Image 1 (cartoon, rainbow, N blue to C red):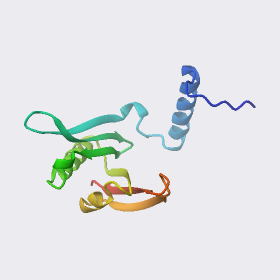
Image 2 (cartoon, rainbow, N blue to C red; image 1 turned 120 degrees about the vertical axis):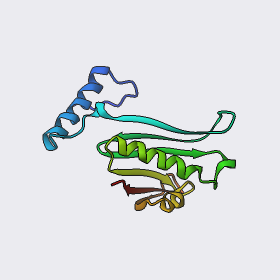
Image 3 (spheres, one colour; image 1 turned 135 degrees about the vertical axis):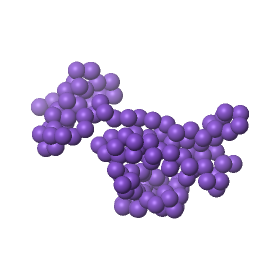
Length: 142
């Protein structure tokens, strides 16, 4: 057995492991949404000059909205723009058959914000990154 680590995999090798997990998943959950059905999207907040002052990057996958990031410029915080961005993302997700939301945030970021807009804290991974914590939250969209 040869174990190999690479940051530049052969395309065929990469496809082999991707197909392997897809096939395995389909054996366990025959009606599972295919990876190709994943919908990546962005929600932007723009000022009067059409400059981006905030936004969300997210993915709809396996009936779940994955909020990958939410950012607001310093001067836009506390004005309800973050809530509007999240509501827009959640509405888009519902239109794409999502029933749940999952988000990861760190101890210096937005845990209180997510809790304020209805998310439930489900786990914490301490010392990630070192000296801080990663928090995992969820929300039911139904």
